[in-house]
Image (tube, rainbow, N blue to C red; front, side):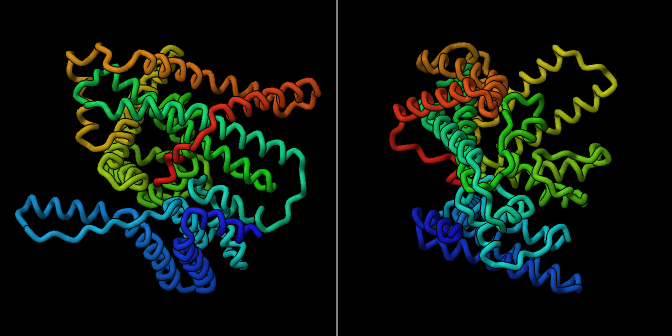
Length: 457
C-alpha cells in the first residue's frame, strides 16, 4: 500500500519519470546483494562502482548536461572554435538529487559492512520512495527508517496529534511567512544591483535567508508530520540554525540530513577517515588534519561539490566556496584563541558576525548570475553605497521584525513544546485553541502556493 501510494504521489508530477526512479532502486538493490554475497574485494568494488556510475550518470545527465555543454561552448568560443556542441534542454526529475543520495548511501553502507542488505525488494523500494520525504528530504539512512517500515505500527492518538501539529505548523510557516517574504525578495532581486546600497543588500540577504529557512523547514515539518501520522519517526532536519554561534554550528543545525551525508560519504572519505555513520549534522574535521593541506583542499572541494548539488550554476559553486572560507576562517580563529578564555560578550559578538556572514552567503544562492552576485557584494567596498536606502520602507521593517521573531524562536519553541506535551487539561485546551487560531490564520493566507524552493534541487 505504501509503495503504491508513493508511486501515485510521484506520478501526480509526471508518471513518465517513475521508471527512472525505480531504475535507481533496482540497481542499488541488486548491487547491495551482490556485494554481500561475494568475498572477493575486487568484485565488491566493481558492484559499488557500477552503482555509483549508474546513479550519478543519471543525475549528471538530467541536472548538469545543459550546464556542462554551455560552459564547454563558451570556452570553445573564447579559444576561437566555431563548432559548438548542441545544447539539450532536459526536464529535471523532481527529487532526483534527494532519492539518488538516499539510495546510494544504502549501497555504500552495505559495502562498508555497516548494514546488512534488505531481502525484500518492496521494503527497500519503500525506503527510497516513501512519499513524505521523496521530493525534498530529509535524506534518510536505511538504519533509521527501514526497521520502522518493516513492521505494522501500533495505532496511537499521540502520533495523530503530533503529526497534525507538525503538518499545520509547516503549512503555517509556508503560507504565512515564506510566501509573503517571497514578494519582498523577488522585488529586491529584480532591481538593478548597481542601485542597491550595502544596507539594501544586507536587507535582501536576510530576507531571502528567512524565506528559504521558513520554506524548507516548512516542508521538513510537513514530511515529519505526515510520517508520524503513520507511526514512523524521522530525524529532525533543522534545529534553529540562525541561533548558531559559528559557521560550523550552523551546519550542525541546517539541513542536517544533507550535511551529515556529505560528511560521511564525501568529505571523510577524501580524508581517508572512517565515518561514524550517524545523521547528526556538521563536517567536523579531526584535529590531526587541521593544519594539513589535504584537509583544507578536501573541505573546499567538498563545499564546491555541495554547491553544485544545489544547482547547475557557478553561483552555487561560489556559495559553496563562501561557506568553506567561513568554516576555515572560524577554525583558524578558534585555533589561535584556544589558550584564551572566551568572554561572553565575545561569544555574542561572534554569533552576530557569523549570522551576518552566513546571511550574505545567501546572495549567490538567489542571484541570477555570478555577475549580479559580485555587483551586490561590491556595495560593501564602495563607501558611496553604504548608507542610502533604495527600497520601500516597509521592506526594512519586515526584515527587522522577522529577525526578532527568528532570534526569539528557540525560547518560543520551548514553551510551545511544553504546551504540546503537557497532560494538564487546561494546558491541552490552550494548546488546541492556539492551533485552531493558527489554522484559521493559515486559511486566511491560503492561496495557490509558491513552489517549495528545494523542489528545484
